[in-house]
Length: 307
Ligand SMILES: Cc1cc2nc3c(=O)[nH]c(=O)nc-3n(C[C@H](O)[C@H](O)[C@H](O)COP(=O)(O)O)c2cc1C
Image (cartoon, rainbow, N blue to C red; front, top):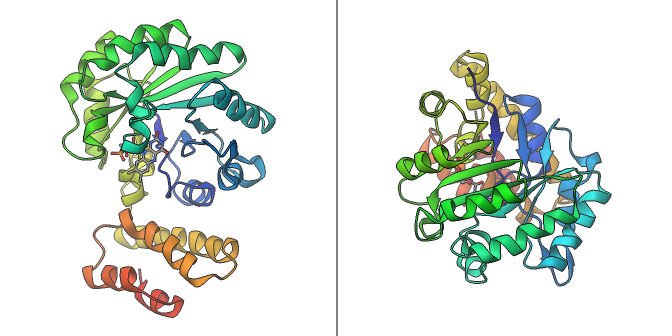
């Protein structure tokens, strides 16, 4: 049986423009997640709001993610999401950035079950919302997740996505499949696997090894090879020329969106597009890739981009 594929939230990459374009051109993904919304200087950031507005989003399933530092931030973020019509919300328990973890937020909360309990107790005030969590095995020990599990069950969390790494590892080093297997065995909640899925073979291997999964979440693998979920779901392998045609369309849609949104501001457009190329199409000719990275004007950028 095929697993449902979820597109991981990737701050700076999977904004609404990218999600819409990806879904229209490639698809194969059941659900998308927004990068986390947070409170900054007592309010939400404008760019986060654009990212969740229904009129900006055309994908069938979009789950906004939040990271709240305390009860009032939780309420503020939930207020905004409810006003915007969302009834499913993902809670970030996995962000590894030291500025966040040292405040016992993101993955930094995982060694503190009492803090996780206090955070998740907020969900009880929103009985009509389906809450999910996205977490790691732990901050520095891979069994921290097992101590958190009863709290997730107690608060009726509807789905757990497990990135099979420690917070300390950030995005490097191996995923720990053994520790994931222990969590999988212990977890009675719908569980989504996440971490380092790059190929259709990876998707097949994980779904065979863990047949009770509720899905597999993919991030960088989809940024690199946007056809991955589509090929897995349809069983059809795109020819090189079909692939290049779709890559070129994805690039064109994203590029024209940023040109419009950033009002022709060359440095900003170039920054955004260089970010787009950071993971995308790693097999690309090295010289072209370097030219894109170094482009100091739109004309140099456009000359470098050839599919
Ligand atoms: C640049 C970048 C930004 C990310 N932003 C978020 C985020 O906003 N929320 C989140 O839960 N995870 C975030 N992640 C983690 C990914 O969602 C995912 O868990 C991680 O990359 C492992 O999956 P992958 O190997 O399929 O990419 C981010 C990862 C990267 C590399």
